[in-house]
Image (cartoon, rainbow, N blue to C red; front, side, top):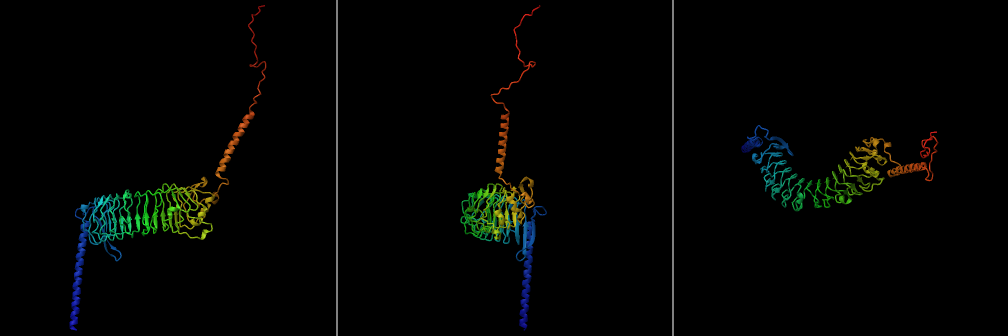
Length: 472
């Protein structure tokens, strides 16, 4: 029994010693962390000035562990003024809107987000971020980056978001994105010369097949070919030079933005290969004039569709969504939101009533609607469209739902008939006037003479030769 008691006391004493050591290490680590934080956030050169960074401790998910967030934006920092060794527990570092002319080479095993946007960075060197082994999000947009090396993103196996928008990328090395094994979002927008890159995005540049969102806005693209079997879900192609919808697109696309391109007519062949899309944006199309019959028929899963601010759009075919029989009131469509805001459509065929009546949102704001008997059916829609009448003049500016039903009238005759009647009346009036004038004129064989009396100043006068007067 004595030996057992002695053993228990020994174990208890050892545990106490271990606890004291851990407590001492924790205190030492906390002191070191505080010193490193002060050294980075409040260096001697900027202490007690507006150039000091803002540092805050938060509880990071998922277990509420300590995390340090540092905001050094708008401080006019240069690379030489920054410490390469980041503080312990740092989670987020914001160095946007500074005067960095190159990307700093930091060291940290806890940093998850690095923001270097709005600087003067022109190039990235090999292994620029390889010492940030836990980095999840990297924002490099709004710089002047034009040169990248093949191993620039080496050592970033956990990177999920990469933003390279608003730079000067044009010639990229092969397999540039290959080290990023779990990259989910890639933004290459507003690199005007990106179309000069001859490499394929997936096989040439090494984009992994786990990519979910790809943004290629304003890259001067005239065509785009992507593998059909990649699991890409979001694709943005705004403000390019596309004259037709790309023919080869992934079959898993859920969201597609093709706005501000050069399409003139939306045809069925444009949408036949995007049957899985649920959100389609065809906005700000300066040349788009019409939506042809069956152009939207393949999009059976579509939930959101917008043609907003396509100011040349004047024609929507009655069968753009396919043939909708009047007996289709019980049919269910997936489409919930439809916007024609800012277009030049004047009327909608009544055959669209079953579809429009099931929408949760229908935006017709800014349309010059012709409120006649053909548009009367829209007053019965259960959703507020914000559409206003442009014609006739007596109800101009009134909401379609607010105007009286008897104001939605159609002329019994077509407009050309009224024009023909007016021209006929003008011709008959001219003929009548001509006949009256001709009737009042005398016949050509009749000579009008006026009887002249002896006392008239117009009487005939005979002039005789002068005779000498007889004095007698």
